[in-house]
Image 1 (cartoon, rainbow, N blue to C red):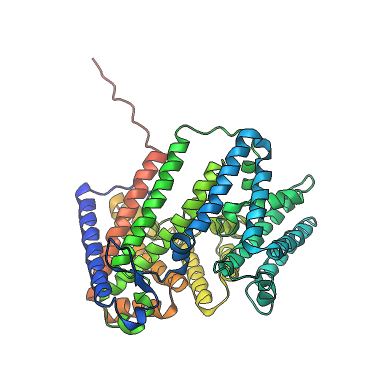
Image 2: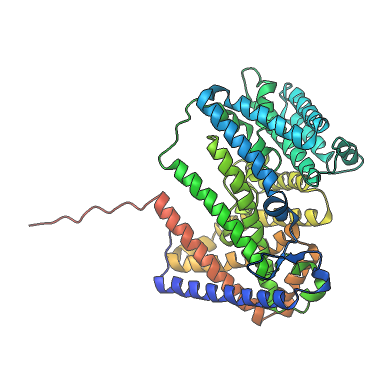
Length: 507
């Protein structure tokens, strides 16, 4: 049955009411736990004094969020503001040289923040992968790139390369890994695109322009070289109607999201509570499930805001950066699960789609997913938690294909075709509900810990069965139906149903 299958309006109203009440109920449990344990000894390292006007302590367990929007926001804002100013001046005076100005400013900013030895290290990796790209062998480019990336994940290579960065700047450790990791991925994209070019080679200068574009340099997202090359060198810098209005609106939305998250951290310690296993074991089922859900929602919000700030700057430079990740509240299939759309686009273009083809062959799909999650594991940093996460997501993605193929065969196909579209949508939503929680549990491994994911799974499937399990699954079913309704409305906008011809009138 198609995505445009509709449900009665009263049924959707009922799903909305159930979901809202459940969210408020779970949030009230988390608020109560946060308020009653604010002075807990194990919380001292992460619960700090918050805003004066709120008068409550604040959850500051996420170092990355604190770095971006509390500790080093002035440094980041200063660097990005300088980029915007110089880019605007160049766009007005000499637009044909704007990509060169982006590169020069990026190199100077990296040199100022990290030193000349770090710039030398980055350039050495660029030279290595550029040299390999001239051979125009995909397997050699991939092998060299992955081996280079592995040197930042294992000793003694990590310590040796870290020695190139000196000084006591607190942010340098994070900038080191961010700049080096994204540099390798960008250089691999350049090398693979150079392999596809039939006439000649891209110049080394184009690689430097691509790699040292400051907004993307340290924190991403990754834009593949083919897209960056076309967009950074286009001569027409005119904007679409209301484009600047949309960019300004996006900037305000990012600012509002930052304020909203900081306010939320005063009332719900969703990041600190999961680190205390003794406390978690005494929480109610609703509080534990709510913590699992809100942890994933927060991780999406963080990625959306961080990439949103960078994307706003890049849009001012007339680029079309990767879109923010799809919200976890809109996911119920593994094929759409990702928290970094730039990395996802990179993996799909060079690995998953390249090896998987049309994704209709079970064996090709298995090989494509194994290679994709193998590279993802190397990117995230090898470890048991990452390996388990990669295996489970790889299994889930392949299981979706196997299930789709199974239900497209007889007798399942005939049974579904005999149903109404609404009933087919309801039955599919039941399976999607189970899929939703497997996605939640699997991804808790990546953003939290194995112990927390195991505790949530045991409480949801064993100790909470049958009452808590069935209630949570029913609420999730309501959420999935609302997601499907959103997709249905978007499908009607993208591909509206044809208007039937008027009935003839006979006189």
